[in-house]
Length: 491
Image 1 (tube, rainbow, N blue to C red):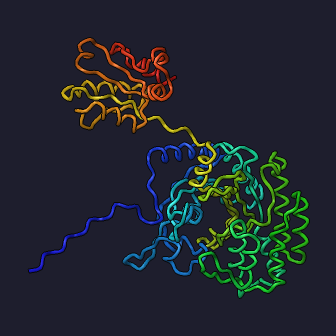
Image 2: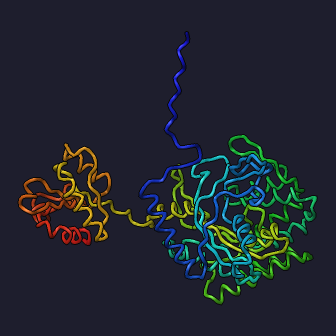
């Protein structure tokens, strides 16, 4: 009789394209989100939490290179035949929420939201299938003042989290201008929709591929370093030159850039309207004190998603970091957004103007860490050691006293037999203080308070004389424990 096969043990590994986040990571992200929310709140935006799951119909097919409902998104089919999916961004769910609750919401409706999104795409270095976004949108206003305000708020947000002025730039363009350029290049009309989509995605890769790579994608296509071939838009040389001319239209001043764009879209009504909107946004930002040191007009910005209808914007960090091979490079984009006047219309049949911004939380946090600007690592808890397991109630009373005073604290809950292991645990937790009360201390009514941070520094650098001058362990009466802990923490 054959022996039954043993069920293999599951592998303890993170799914491909996902990551686990521990204490420091979560704390730093929370602190940054708190700072961002403060700016959004100051601008009058209200918080919104919507479902992480939407119907595929509600999300729409707006991701690049998506042909089937279960590609690009994590989707599954219900028993009734409906397709559901994890949200791939925060904007498409907002359109559904607004359409569903519009009679109960103010108009315009200003909301911000924060949370994870999921994309079923090929993972790579620094590219995950789950990542955090932090969005702010205004729904119900066609005014260019709404777009200007979003850009100003993004500028204030970057500075609030620690990105210094001069280390970032917010670049603005307008899809209508690009549509005008495509019209001039002979790419207007429903029969050219596929080509226009390829052109949009090609322009959006300018920073990564450079002009030559983009030009190849505008034409027959491009082979990457791995040998994979990407089909191009199939434009002729004259058409490709018009598009490339649009991307290279940026001049030394905003006014000169606008003038060049007017030349490129000459004869196109939609293109001219886009240039007018850019001029208006620039004037509003200038009046509010947001000059070219923070926000500029840049025709190379198009944004990859297909639902944008007007102004689009992108925040780029301009300081240098080292890549995985030690080569210097600009950090790049950390936020983007734009106007999407047709997204709510999919639900209501009526055009509802909307505009907004999305911050890539993980990328922004990585930028802060790369420059040493992220928040200081949160201190671990004060650890009350256990010298006598039969006196656990005494130790729990100490912890309760510390917690009620607002101090993070815990009792050591491992095996207390080896005291050295308790201190090793406190060190691993990043604990600033260990409290010790053995039988002798209990009889004398005192506790030992060990300053672990100072002790570590003294052990590393100090001489014997300095150790005497700067004690790292104190004996205090039990009723003075809280005061002494506060004194050490304040230092």
